[in-house]
Structures are given as structure tokens and as C-alpha cells.
Length: 103
Image (cartoon, rainbow, N blue to C red; front, side):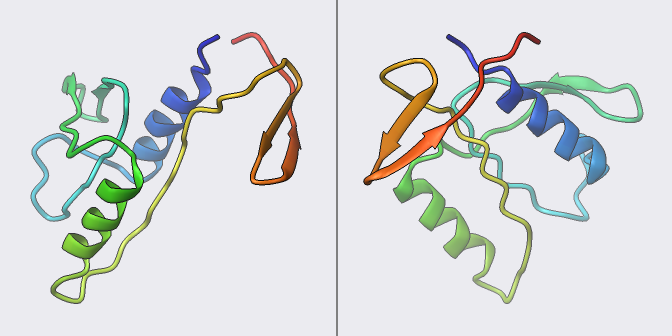
């Protein structure tokens, strides 16, 4: 099963934040385990530059790098869900219930 909503969420977030390829007025740190071809509002379409995989070590290093000079920003985590049986997931003693939907 592939959860494509994670990929769609990233594109929607970038649309909302008005991300543009080549914009140097902001620094973007994109951690993902998938390649994302993004088309910005100018019509420029290309793969997003990723700075690593979304694991604990890389996330902590990215936060450290981004805040070195008093920087601030937004962290959006849209990770993939791994589960054992359809309909439930148990992590750290917490039970999560979800619904599978078609795109």
C-alpha cells in the first residue's frame, strides 16, 4: 500500500507557502523519503532538492543547522504510516485507528 497523501500534502504546503524554485530569500530544508517533482506558480517544474531522509538524526541536525544564527521556521512532518493489520496501528502502547481511502 502506498499513501500518496503524504506526497500531496508536501505539494499543497509548498503552494500555500508560495515556494519558488531558485528563491534565495528563504532557506528550505526538505527531508523526504521520496522524490517530488514540484511545479511552482511561475510554471517552473523540477525535482525538489532534498537534504536528507526523515530520520531522528537528520531531523535534529537540520533543526540545529537552521537555528544556528537565530533562525526560525516551520517544521512539517508528513511521514508514512507502517502497520501490521488494515485498520489499526500500535506504536509505543498507543492504538491508532485509520481509514484507507482511494485517491
